[in-house]
Amino acid sequence: MHRQVIFILSVSWAVVAATDGTSQTVGTQSVPDFSGVWGHPSLPGFEPPASGPGPVLNKVRVRTGPQSGRSAITQLVGDYNNAILKPQAAEAVKKFGEIELSGGLASPTPINQCWPAPPPLSLLNTEMQMIQQPHQIMILYVSYEVRHVRMNEPHPARVTPSWYGDSVGHYDGDTLVIDTVGIKTDRPLAMVDLFGTPYTEALHVVERYRLIDYEAAKDGLERDAKENFQLDVGWIDRSYKGKHLQLQFTVEDEGVFTIPWSATITYRPDSNKWPEMICAENPHWYYAGKDALVPRADKLDF
Image 1 (cartoon, rainbow, N blue to C red):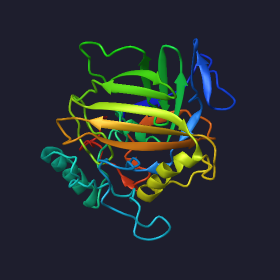
Image 2 (image 1 turned 90 degrees about the vertical axis):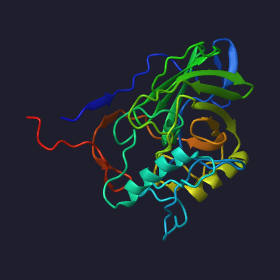
Image 3 (image 1 turned 60 degrees about the vertical axis):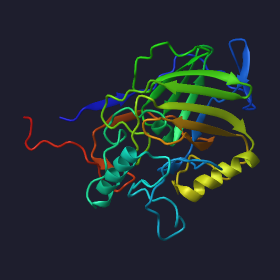
Image 4 (image 1 turned 180 degrees about the vertical axis):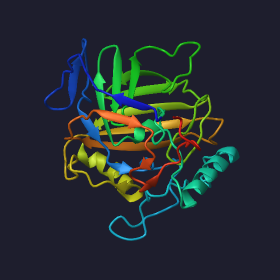
């Protein structure tokens, strides 16, 4: 029998949202207002950085139609020749891609197997909501997951590894900075992206969120549109010219990467009502158009 997890979202405290989308009061401090639902309707990867080392990208591209040249979503074959990868990591990405190229089942990931997705993999969610409180930030992802970020506290001297790691945050002017370490490695499907790129206990992720004008956001949006498959959704107004939320993050892991690398995610306001979500070990990988490689028994349990 398949395990089934039901996520019901319930928020029991008030979130104060500013009408101009620029600031709110959390406790006695005036901070940038990131409240509301934000959307980033593209897959399967991050926005490559404007310059410098970037993430593993998909080798398989769309060949025809309006999205020609962009990353395909039906096959996820990471570029294992990316210079950021150490040899063992490159081999893991290569093996992951070989499953995709076999023409049968989709490679297993935390998402299609109902396992928690650690950062930065969790950042690939197409929708997220941020709830700001004086003592913590909560980030809710449409994939039924929740992250808790302690504010204005250091990491403990000895971090107990956990699914999402130990995340601490602070405001640096108009920027929310989140520092995450201690991400659990003793788990199935330890990967930082949808290409099977592994990580070790040395994984360190630093996220920086800030509100930017449309003119400043255009570069990230264009980099995303050039690289990633754009999902046709009705809850994002792609002609929106107001404030955007941009996440710039850096990833380092000396056990996997030769050098720290960075990427961005540029969010638009999302008009979708926040849904209740369900996760089950459903073998159908909806955007790949083929079943996922989930464990199957040779005979029924009953």
